[in-house]
Structure formats: structure tokens, C-alpha cells
Length: 432
Ligand SMILES: [Zn+2]
View (cartoon, rainbow, N blue to C red):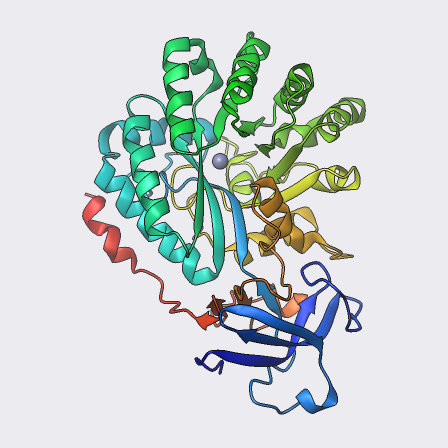
């Protein structure tokens, strides 16, 4: 369908107002305009409104949606795919924490982490993802194992998937100052992001101060898991924003989950949103993992809330909002395959990214690119930019989001890529 030579034009593709600049074409009520997209030497040479001559031309895409390659700003490549050897015993958050901890201590050698990361990246590549941030469990001795593997993988995948990593540990571990300083040095040396899971521990503010001081001293960005719980008293999102203000920290901060915000009274919510909007904070919701873990009831009852945070209210205040994969086939989420179309489909259904769709597609495109500090070429289609995009089968939102899009075509650097997914069998040898 797409010619493999130096250049080609895709006629009559549907591009959405949230990812194409210019808007020279007329866009329909869903935001789609009909364009001809010309690729030369791996880049987008031209984006022009389709003309009557385009119909029936070679590579007439007949209104198929073309999306920019995806940006996945919150994943756990180090945990992925351990489910067959370490399932979550009861589907709960404590069950996940306990199971992952036990598996990490027993099985996470460099070879094990590498094999599972490689598998996950092959999947992300096949689905059309261009950049990923992963968290890396960094409790001793895992930080000495996973960070070198990550640096090797980043090198191996350079030019295909841009990789970033953030360290991950319960913030109470930062009480051990010597260990914390060592970890900061390791993260800095690897060009990583300083991250932690916040809990409502009594010394939370002091520990946050320690993290912000380290970030300022070493020029690091920050990434937190916050309030992944239904407990109304969990307000670490606001505590992080207040710490940023206290330290005058203007670097990028990405905060994931923030589930409890959806359970709090309006006055509390407004206070938190004010504090967050005042700083350089992006928020990422993880709808698949949240639906799986939140409101899991031990008495066989049905869950009653969705687990996701208040993205509509955040967006209305100008906060940069994203959605991402989070866990894949590990005790925190039994399913998932780093497919950002699946994530966007789930987000649409769970968080109501519709009526109107507006610019919600940016939550898997330009917004996470901004949260990760990637340049302007990420998450959009523009003349002169890289020809990195996904040709969907669907021609409208209802078509794109109703089927798995297993027939999508992924184009990277102007060439169609092999979309074969790795067989699960490849990991069997690790699951004994
Ligand atoms: Zn996470």
C-alpha cells in the first residue's frame, strides 16, 4: 500500500485538529480534516488539503485516520510480564506490592530484566510508540542491577524508541540519607529522573524537601506516584505542589495516579488544583491499572468507582494532562501490552474523552511529550518533522476506538515497519 522508495504521498488521510498544525483543510464536527501527506527522505515533506484529484489516486487512503507515533510517559518495563510466575493473589494493591517485592528479590537478575524489557519494547514498537518513560524499582540491591540494564537498552533502542527512566522507591526509604545520596548520584549519572512513591507518612514534607533539594542541586526532573488509593486523607499531590512552591522549583514534575482526589470534597479538590496549577506539574492518569486495582473488594462485591483522577477539572485549569500504560502483565495489572490505542480507548470510555473529543488525543501525544521534555516534533504531524505515524484502519473515532486496530500500519522514518508481535513463548524460559 505505501511504496517503499524514497518518497510517497498518502492521499485523503484523516488528520485531527489536535495533532496537525495549520488547519488549511476544513475539519468536520469530530475534528478531522482530509489531507494529502507527502513523505520524502524519512520526513514529512508536505501536508496539504486533499483535492478532487486525490480520490482514486495511488495510495488513496479513503479517509483512514493517521496519528502521530505515540508517547507513553508512565510505564514499568522492569516489572512487565512476570504474571505467569507471580500473579497477584487477590487483585488488590497490597497483593501487588507484596507479590512484586517477592519476585524482585528472587528473580530480577540483569538477564531477566533485560529479556522482559526487550519483549515489552518490541510490543510498543509494533503498536507505533516512539518514546517511553519507565520507572525502575530502585530499592537495594535492585538499583545496581536495573539501571545498567536500562542504560544498555536505551542505547540498543536509540532511533526507534526514546527511553527515559525514573527511580522508584517508597518515599520513607529516603530517610536513609547515605543510600538516598548514592541513588541520586546513580540517577544523575544515567541521565535519569528522580522519582518516588509518596505516602502520607508523618515526615512526608521533610522527605519531599530532601527530594526537591536533590533535584535542585543536581538539575534533575521529578516524577512521583501519588495517592494511588481511595483514602480521602491522601493529599500528597498537594504536598508535592506545595514543596515545589517552597523550594521555588521550576523544573518539570510529572505526577501519576492521584486517585484519591476523585473521592475528596470539592473545597479540598479546589485547594489542591490551585496548588498544582501554579507549578510546572503534569499529571498522568493510568486508567487500566486504576480500574484493575482501585475499589477491589475482598467480599466479592462489585466495584463502585472508576479509580481515575479529575483530568477534566485539571485540563480546565490549564494543567498538562496525560494518560499512559502503567503496568503490563504483572501483579499491578494482569493485562496490557503497551498499546497506546488501547490506552486511549480505555481512557475515552473510563474518563469520558468524548462529547466533545476536543483535544483529548493530546493526552497520548503532545502532552506526554511536553511532560517528558521532548522537542516539538513529538506527538504531532508537521511539515519538516519526522515521518513517524500510525495509519489506522478506522476513519473516525467510533471506528478507531471500537476494534483493536490490529491492521494498523506503522511508519517510522518514512518506512513501514514489521509489526510482528513477539510470541509469549519467548518468555517461557523465565517463568519456571
Ligand atoms: Zn506506575
